[in-house]
Length: 331
Image 1 (cartoon, one colour):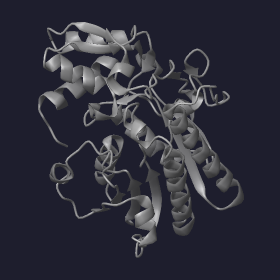
Image 2 (spheres, rainbow, N blue to C red):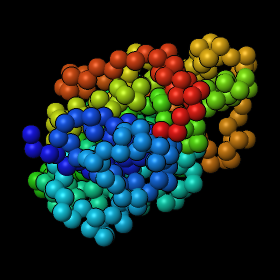
Image 3 (spheres, rainbow, N blue to C red):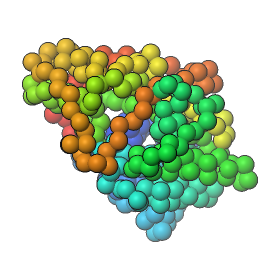
């Protein structure tokens, strides 16, 4: 079997590290990670030990721009590029206000150029935020993308991701570039950190300490939480089977739940004594914070075209994340 060189940007992130672990398990794969660790939730040394310090894994701790400038890919011939590097999280993006468009689109152009240089297929991990909430929360790839009137940091993130998508798709139409786009919905599971503002690890941490679970506003916001392992399987299938220039939702509509219901499930599964408090998130994170609209996916394109089938229900996502946090794991 011929070795396959794979580049993963953001490969030491939450989704990225789970993807890298899966790619390394496939015979013949050689994986190179580029990550500046700005949003990484893991201890890289611990992660390398978890995966057994394999000879088929290499990495550069730097930005994508730095990697490309110093020609870090010289001598490699990548066949696949997974692009996950990005600011993340409803709280995590706040630090990049006014900078995200340049960061996200700049990285996208670097990845496009790498794809053309190596004749590699590119998979861009975008965001479900591009839908602006879709139609009463329901988001289909065929729906129009919505830009609300109110300018927020969250909107800058969504619009930057959408601009990167459009650049990628148009490049596939005028060059030999092969590329697909993934829009993930509320990914959760082991290795996710509460630092970016992600709700499940925050709830679990509070439940384990028997502290009140802080639900924003009335907790009626609708989400469809999808296990990170299911998402990673979808990424690999999209790289293998995705149609050039197409975007695919990856999210489990069967896991549709309100944030208040999620909090109640966490308390029950963790056997916690925590109560549930309703709070105004702006008092915690400042006036720039904005809650997302309701959102859950139409996943038919992914299930029918890619053969993707998410397997984990909400309770399984909670249990797996709970065990990871309770064990105090670093990778």
